[in-house]
Amino acid sequence: MTRVIALTAAAFLVLSQPISSPISDASDAGLGRAPGPPAAQQGAESTESAAAALLEERFIARENQFLKNVRSYSPRIETYIQNFRPDPELGSVPTDDHYFLGRMDFHRGVAVRSFLPQPSLARRILGDLADPITRFYSMHYQQQPFAYAILMDTRRFDRQHYQFEFVRREFLGDIRCMVFDVTPRRHAGGGLFRGRIWVEDQDENIVRFNGTYTSGRTLSSGIHFDSWRENVQPGLWLPVYVYSEEVDLAYGVKRTLRFKSETRLWGYDLARGNRQQELTRMLVDAPAPVRDSSDPAPDPSPVSRAREWENQAEVNVLERLEKAGLVAPAGDEVDKVLETVVNNLVLSNHLDALPPVHCRVLLTAPLESIFVGNTIMISRGLIDVLPDESSLAMILSHELGHIVLGHNLTPKNNQYAFHDRLLVPDEELLHHLDLRPTEQEETAADAKAIQILKSSPYKDKLSKAGLFLRAMAMTVPRTPELFGAHLGTRLAQGNQVRRMADLMASAPELQPTRVEQVSALPLGARIKVDSWNDRIRLVRSKPVTLLSAREKMPFEVTPLFPHLTRFSGKVENVREENLNQ
Ligand SMILES: [Zn+2]
Image (cartoon, rainbow, N blue to C red; front, side, top):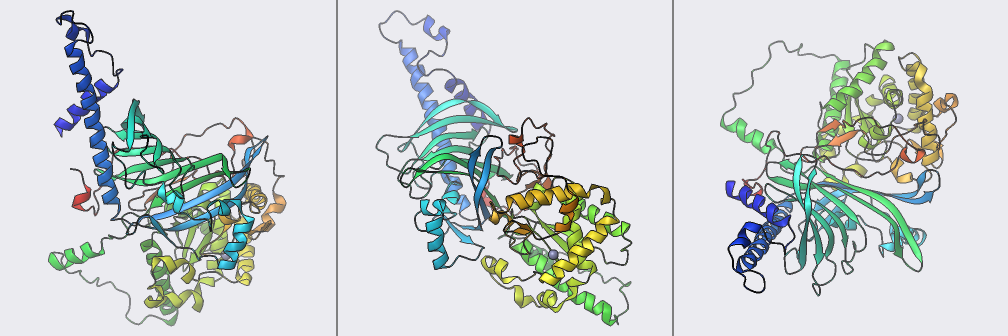
């Protein structure tokens, strides 16, 4: 280890000087007056290039090791794309959107197994005709080009195909990196990466790459990517995020494509789980659990039996969603924040008889909320864009309305008390689960929610929530996929707000160009997901004063710069071969 650090430092020293300049004057001093470069200088040059070559060999080897390691994982991958048009006042305005969700499958190259129902052939063809971005990727638009951008080059990352030029040292977050420009060598072939890489200086992992692919790589050529990896376990860096943006990507005859997209990965530790370890521990050394003698009476009433049955369905659904990487584990700070708001609603409405209501976070971007049993689920994307607590209270009060009205006690909800109903592959789970309330129940829950809000601490701030709904109504025609609910029902459709629409009446006029009026936040504003174990936390960013309406970016994709740090938590379920140490 000491050797590696010393060598890295030497490489820094060498690389930070122009390759042809002598390392020091002192080395020249005693060397006579021979014509041409002094022998020692030649020696220094070859030492320099040898050190540079050695460093390159090391990060190339590390990258190729990474490519082997990453194949043992099947993270969840989500890509959200917004097409946009330039706007003189707002900078850009979304015009259309696309959403993909699935899991990576590295067994045969780089494949994505979609979690979403695939559109029919007829629809695909119609879509191909109507939609430029679809046509751009030939037959049908896929997540694949964005999935490729999590791995820089799977086959040819070596010194025969690439040349590297040291640029400078730079910190990414807390991580000191060496920055290199990477260009394909002449005659090295097509479809190669061209851009810049950041190599962390401890183990020489590539932690970020930014650039494009030369023509020849079927799907990703010409698209620009900024691709990030995080140190999720000791010595283990894995892809977590890709941002892409195009302002004038040419396609077809004289047409250009403009879009922003984000790809997120999480759920690296899902497949491993720790159930097997738990079982092993139990069989080896754990003492048998002691039965609590204060157990309730052995003859529960019909009401408590019905509640127990409903609770089983709830637990089953949540466990299955968590196992599929669609719901964050329970008990994180975000759940607590949500439960505090629910509690405010419950207490101010004297709903004390209600069993405890819990909150969980769906890890996906589309804006949706849904209940199962006494648990409310709300998506990461929805929490991101909500501008304030009263808007959050509005969303939660609707789900609470369902629970208060007993919509969670229907046979439809309780069908999942039977385990076999959830024994489906992850890919089929979202279209298999049917948690959607009926239209009638939705209307009743809205009415109940408004009643709850009006006697809550949020009653004087509901115009802000109404403003959020107005912003939603304006955005939904252009970003239907962002409002595409995959477990619940849609918040808005067409150009109609379908939930809590009555609150819009008391809201002020929407003023998109007025900088002071923030009706909705950009995506990625609030929630940070740990890509290894799916735990979530609130983003801790300093409030920034907006300078113009262009910085409001409601419901928009914005670039993310992960703050890189070295892993310092608890080591979990890492295979030996994946660790450097
Ligand atoms: Zn509802």
